[in-house]
Length: 434
Picture 1 (cartoon, rainbow, N blue to C red):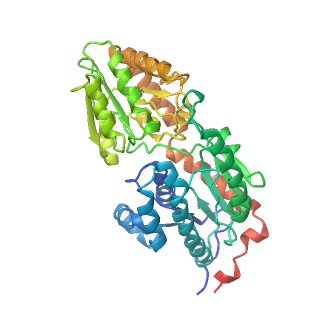
Picture 2 (picture 1 turned 120 degrees about the horizontal axis):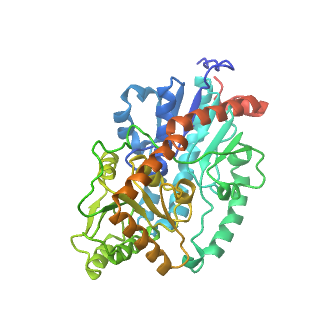
């Protein structure tokens, strides 16, 4: 088999994206590889995607004309066993144990496949967008093309007032373990470029890395999906707040319920909750205890198109999360012309400012509840304030967080990685040559 020749220096690079998974339905970090691939192809860039087979049907349905550019890694026995075991554990424990074992198994297969595809397609640069954790090691090195990893986002802790008992000691141990794992699996040590969403993530990168470090926001917004409502904002009736996300403890949805109960506005505002998770039953009980029946509506998990429609019908987004590295929903709400009330911690602080919403300091539980109640109260009685903040949020997204702008930036990163790649990174491994 003859390898395709690599692109001339002035032509768009030939890109291989390697990802644990890529999905619109899963949301979260899984949507990032999908955006890179589809938008690169939209621009005519020669690109291929390596991804786990669990999203095969969805991806082929979304882009049937690109199916020949999609390569799927099948489930192994280890993947299936890890998934079953992980369902019996708390989310975070499962992510660090059985989930990690499953991701490692997938990366081993992905590395072998990537080496072959680099040679077959004359790939100029390999991009690994996820996992977004800066501490998780990568096996993608020695592929015959320079590797770009990220944007990563992490190095999070809980706010001091909400710190879990063993949180800091566990974090210290994980940092030491991470440095050792990076030496055993040196993808991030040998990468051409490491992309980070913010300063705190930069501080978590492996110390021995010599890669170029570039700050590039993790999330972006597809402005063709997250659009402004076609009708003017409502001036009468109860204000409608909305929450989108998993119902897990660190999302602190109970804070929103208590804040809503304190809002003294007529007519009383309502809260719509889109998402599901292990906390749903206890949150429904809390609604009854607070006397909020008829004002809080649980809608369960919803597909992206329905989430976009619900945002266009709402008056403001509320996000009380205590451990949100990213928070793409903040950007999606801003793109939909909504003001946002969010905890001033982690990802939302990177996106939101006083021109388009409220950031509530998590100094204590009582202050967090009171802060949300005050902001929600102001928005509930002032449609003009909602409209002004919503317009500013849309403007901010268009200027700073549009996915098309991100693609411009990532193409510039690819070109620098190719230009500065060492001879070792450019040479195709012997095992891949044909």
